[in-house]
Image (cartoon, rainbow, N blue to C red; front, top):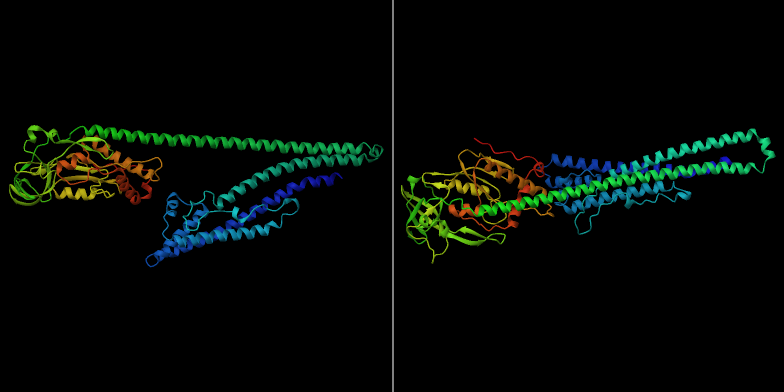
Length: 535
């Protein structure tokens, strides 16, 4: 009777062992199925790459199919996750996605059906269906949802880990059970040796045996309860540590956001301080208008002054040297709605023909008022960076959207200034985050373009932060060398260059987003900006 009761005690443990062995086999089948699909996709991708010139479309489809396979495997990089949101062959990729998921479900269903028959009696089956093995939705007519964070590999590793924990628990319980069995066997041996004495005490022996069995069971049950409590305590401790890590991550993120906002506020305050200072308050006229015919004027500058067609000038009244530029200051609205003071010239001209040593023709490109403030004979010509026979040396950095179309025009600006005779020593290329040219000891001015802004919910915040840091590093370089920094609103009107001065933040951010698409992946999230070479 004692041996029969011991066998009944083993049954739940044996059933649990069988369940975990079957779960391991199922996961091995699923891993085999996944490896087969992944190798097929890799072979297709390799074949398509060899024939890239004649089968680019197939290569693109194979690449996107590989992304789906890597999403199922859980091996996608951050860049590949981004690529999944911009699929070119959406319908073909949708079919690949559906076929892979259907194949996984079919094979999982077949494996589950094959193993389910092994669960009999009170086991009640595996309690698993094919939908629970792996899920990744792509709604009909909708977009592909982000790749799941837990892949088939993750599921297999998790279940394997649980299996190992269960095996350890089972071994401990089995050891305790063996000890109980040995105790029962020893008791049985003693009972056999004293059978004759037991015969005399038949009524007492069953009670003693029952009590011994009960004590052994109670001891085993107590061990199970203690083990369960210990496991739960350790789980809660691990969960507490995870929660603490998450809280610290949130705190770090909030600190970074606060730092970004403070830096933005500091830049705006710095900009407002610089807006109050006229960087060209001691600028002198370079020539004057000697005749006007319609929209054409003649000026007293020519080949002796190394004048070139394309050079532009701002036109000021004849009494500007006596009255100062304060007489031309006007209140205007900035892009953020604030009222600022800005010098408004009478207009601007562009040299179209050099006619002699001291004579050239120019056309009027802009005129503030053709009635009340028209350009007249005797008006003075200003260009803050051009001098008779020479030019100042300048560098450019930041975003220059001179026409408000949401694209950076720094290369166009550099070419225009060069044709005008202005010496551009270097400009900062945001497409490569490097200086093109050198900041030299002769550099007099640095013209700073616009800087993008970053919102808390901006999906491109990481790339924009990279661009903002690069512009800040360029600004630090020129300031450390004592070079005067100018803003577009001060620079363009004083050289007669026609550029849009009321560019909005949305437009600037649009130009920055264009650079995010062209920056190399390794430069989108960190790294140092190479400093400009100096003389």
